[in-house]
Length: 177
Image 1 (cartoon, helix red, strand yellow):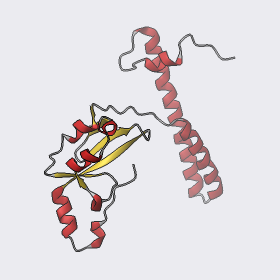
Image 2: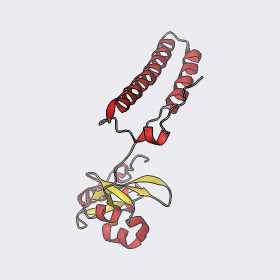
Image 3: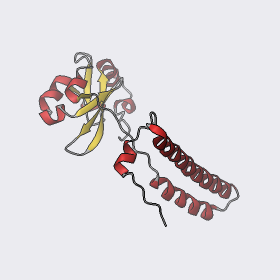
């Protein structure tokens, strides 16, 4: 028989294990760490067994163990929280519009200027939560309920791609999001 917890799931998930308050929260965080370690050890064991079976030529058994590994691993997928400190319009301001173009579709042949992108984008899209790195804008598309990555391409890269006689380099595509 399972012991009923007096703490709600919402309360448990709100506990900051980097700064637990009091003995009970510290104990809860230690239990959470122990549970994570045991999940990882189960996955490591399954992986080792599958490798040993493959090495000994027992491929069908290794495949069955791999299927179990995938089922177990899918139960323990981590959830990530990505902070979006600005909106998409502000994120675009991090790039000099005279030196960068926007690559929305992942095809460098179809880039457009930042100003053209702003004119075509809806107000809702421009106010979507966003963040930036060196050559990408990452934003949350609320209409499609997912995170998107948009390439910000320096114009000197486009010049070298378009002038390059090798057709292979003209059609560089980014990886799927």
